[in-house]
Image 1 (cartoon, rainbow, N blue to C red):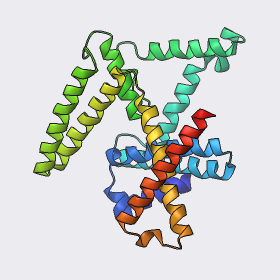
Image 2: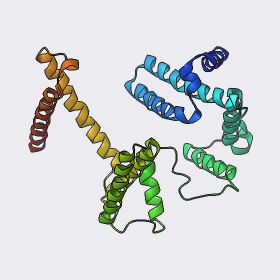
Image 3: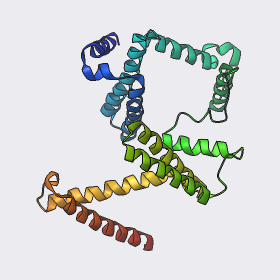
Length: 262
């Protein structure tokens, strides 16, 4: 661990890319690495799990180093904080004489109770609990929570009108080539589109995953056909790839129809 911390400190001092990073710029990598850990565990390949856990640990070390440079805290403070939290939230383990044997359900309830006690005095919003999830799921959930107090569109049509307004604002930001405005308005468009889906009872997460699967499958067909035709996909024109894409769409549609009829 000391070696890893020393390596990270040297990278921040001598590597231009590492030196240019900020806590904000690295958060997307932490999320990405967490997903890769999940995928590795699901694959059952222990070597991949080991490597991906290392990549995730790097994100903790990297962030800790940057905050240490600010004089806020260092890696040891992070370790101490999580150690104390685990002890505090597991009194049934570290203070057995007070609790005796608890079931898994009782442990979960105790964890929740202790967590609530820790947050006493904090300003609480009904949206506060919607944080630790992918962005699409967060968007859907906070929209649902806000809707519980009536802060919502009456129907999908009204939500769609709002989406159209956001798209117009995004177009304006594009015309001005303002990167900050484009990012902001693009986020508003995504949020509004998710809201339209929610009002229609559609899961944005499932819809996007379905589209990703379709794209993967169709692109794999392009790669396969390029190989069968002895073509290097890197040198194929866009028109050639689009033709194969259309073929893939037709073939996959026929497969779906066949599967449904059987």
